[in-house]
Length: 438
Image 1: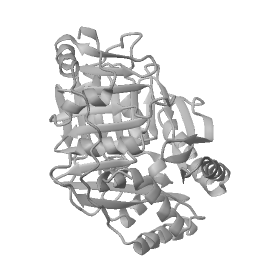
Image 2 (image 1 turned 60 degrees about the horizontal axis):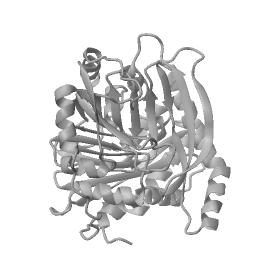
Image 3 (image 1 turned 90 degrees about the vertical axis):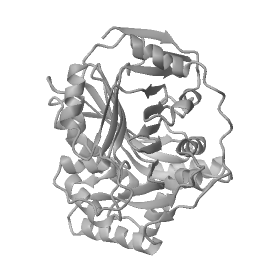
């Protein structure tokens, strides 16, 4: 495939993407936390040459697509220059491990929505430049669609709807206590338990408006909006699941440990110090760090798996987190799909040991997770990849909006405190739904 590189004048990826938000399948991968060193590249994809979606496992088809499209990247440009972009459901974990299925609760989300794209618009926020890269015809079409976007109107906060939790607070806390019982009985060291909020979407409230509201409240370095598969996914995720470069070097950055941001600098600093010193949160993070080391070890060369960052305090617009980093080098002959299969679903949102934690999740959560706690991002024709964990995520389908939020439960967990932590995490999505700018 002969590729073209076209300069793109549009500096605002969100404004450029807005006219595409109602496409049958379009993807915005948005490094929304501008000025943050974690937020360098944003991407827009539209007009896929192939769409992969369904209720089964995508792995064989995904492997075949990537194999036939393999092509070296053009130097000096952002790493995603064409390939696959979209999302994978948490529930695909059932295709990799023997875990019981969740009870069926509407809306029914597909197991994955992936587009195959011959051209990508790439934005380098550090350099202040943007390009369309790809096969000549596809690149020119995408360039034409993005070249003169209308100005974005101010974010509309007028329409709103309250979201209702699936479980009463007392019932959710009782289920957290049940997880603690499992831990004390020796079933698991830790399990992530989420609660679900749902609302009917007013017809005049566009899903892309919800994304813009979320982005304004809590921009994340791995934010995304994916329209397609009869639904929309909006996320302001802070967490990288897996990155892979063309040399086979892999990285995961699991998050465990959360505190809200303070109302003033003194309170904010005190909350950050409290998190950094928390024995419970540090233990939680260490367990998931070890789990990710084990997952990477399935496909990485012996001796290559390292943990160069352990439980570092990182601050985001809405929360403080403890973040670790795990790296490794893939064994010869293995690639992106092998890495995803070895690590899916992300360990930070399951627990340890992973399979037993997933069984407990299936037993105690009120509904399937769907896109929540799966992954989204891109896998390039070059073999490189960058996927985020689908947390801080809202999904729209069949006139319903679904939001999940959860946290890692350990033997030291206090159910009321764990419940409150989920509300802190859900706040940007629930505020986007409620409307009415504070």
